[in-house]
Image 1: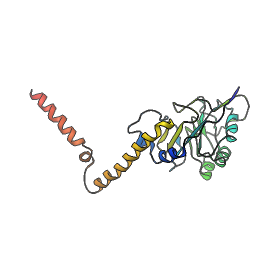
Image 2 (image 1 turned 180 degrees about the vertical axis):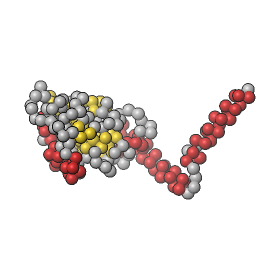
Image 3 (image 1 turned 45 degrees about the vertical axis):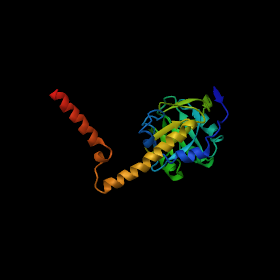
Image 4 (image 1 turned 60 degrees about the vertical axis):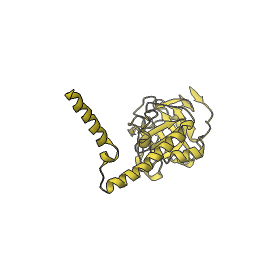
Length: 228
């Protein structure tokens, strides 16, 4: 059975331009939801993307819906693939990645396997997956779902969600969450540059961030409690 829904509205490019300046790991300092399982990891180094989620679900060896999606993708989209627990059949290889790139897709997120790693490197298509497999999916035309709510890396992803991904991991946000999260992360990243400069000048991290001062207070209170 197939389900083919319309494409979602794309996230405002202004919001995505802001979001891509934030590192997922920085947002991870203050947010704990929306992060995919670390097993879904980037296969190419030094890539960071922020785009609109176009979701599909394909289970087992039938990857027909992946090929359908290649005809629907728009510039700025991120293809998010729910594999229904299949960790054997690759849902993306060199041909799929090349076609996605030509459609303007900026990245592919798979809760499962990819293949053709050399071609992925050559084409420069950012892919996040659980690993590589030489066993590929096939177009058997039995089932597939396009633009439905899916689960990827333990995170619920709706069509039209924002996706931020780099080597450290994948984060899914609602569009209305972007401004606050991104601005806070960018502020932290800028503050860290100042901290690193102070460390380079000879200061110690626990003195700068207050760890030593707070521990001194705790130890003083513990000592007073023992005397009392």
